[in-house]
Image (cartoon, rainbow, N blue to C red; front, top):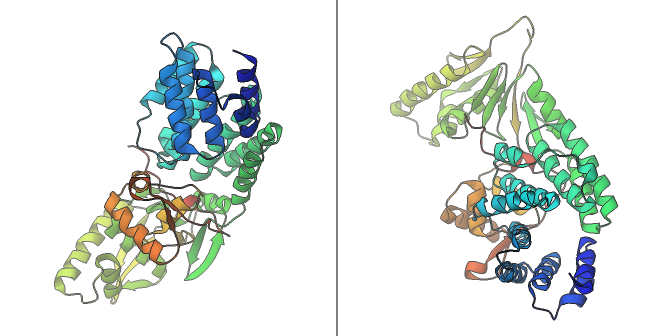
Length: 411
């Protein structure tokens, strides 16, 4: 490798893309193409960067497997920055295996961190935990160490493990300071600030209290029965019932929890669950059926009793917790568009296809939601047709961690 390539690589490692381009901008050999692609990515010119990296990967010969694998990893990172989440991780994982086989463990770690970050964006927390390597970051280059620690911190925060999140953020900040890259230092500081911002609200006896992430973790570990509207589940009191795909049952249990210790009127339950303001006998019959299904899910920790006006939630007292309470945990903002707003608030430009993958919704549904948000002035579009991307201003004063979509654990 010649002196100009070596110098450009060193400038890129320090985050100085312009100095790197001054040395390789007029060259078209494979190493120069790869370095130009990485430099363009650092400058935010992602489509051009992707084109250069693909050209470099094709230009490297069959005996240059390590160089080709590094180009695949760099292109995957550019795709992640572009929020192009449609590609399967097969090529990336194959590149990581090739790099490990040639003892390039640093770039192999980079590949696996990229795969984990992609899975985090898609809400696949269990898969991200499996993909994220548990390695000692003390011997890793500071730039990569900071990125890996940031991914670990985000995973811990979304999994409600505050102690692990704080340790990972501290590691990320230390690595970022050693790297000297201002953007990375700012990102680590912003993630640390999220731990002190409200991530949810607790509703008790119709009073709302903002909660930070640590307080949410403590609430879910308490004896209280928590109706979690952030993840559409029932937690605590020996229960862990996922209702993300059963909206009628979740609407009923939330209405009962908000009315606790009193009862919820039948018409209120019908309105919340079936969205009709004119109930008849068919709605009342269906209400009894759905409440029967809900009873089966929450026994023996709680019961649903009929009252003269409606139904009430009753907790089974235990010797360990004789005065258990029912509480509702809700995100800082609610509505059908909350998860979409949370995804767009990360500052990146998203395509509708990437948003539909992350939300688990059809592209047409996402397009209608974006049109609604655009009409309200809450998002803006860049580009046209297939190149169209969507942006939204960051949400200030709150953390969007619990608004982001997350798949329930497998099994």
